Image (cartoon, rainbow, N blue to C red; front, top):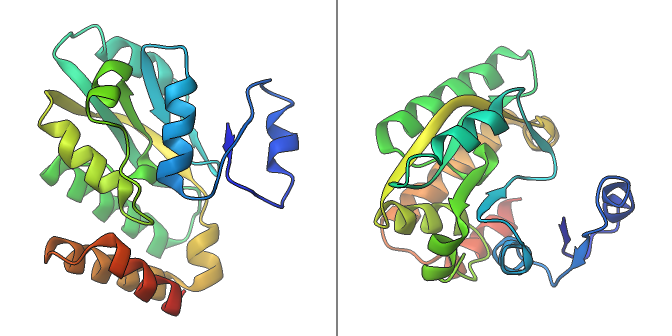
Length: 193
């Protein structure tokens, strides 16, 4: 676990499960890079702190890497809620992933460490570092999206509003693909958050 200065005691919780708690400056890309470059394994898995992989997901991950052509991938998205609107959001996200072949960070991203290092890890973007990384990873070789799910907390949608979060995210993506840098987008993101 890499802690970027949290004040909620999450590092104390993590210490119950691992002795490897690393402290870092804030920024998801910075935190993930720090943890990845200190990791011992040949396969890296980036999983948000409020998410978990469904049973059998890690076995499926190990199995997929028996194919030497596979450089990385992700999982399907599940939002841990019975609300219909959130089920629809995860359904649409999974359709998008199937169409584009690009999972986002809340779907868990896994990668061979050698490919991660060759790409220089995540760029130091304040947002959309996951999308940028996976787009570059796809050029490295074969990527896969497993049928197993990563279940993520509905907290963000429940706190900020389902419509607001969904519209904000879609607008950010449109502006990013229109060529606006994440450095500029984050200012707008912080204003409406």
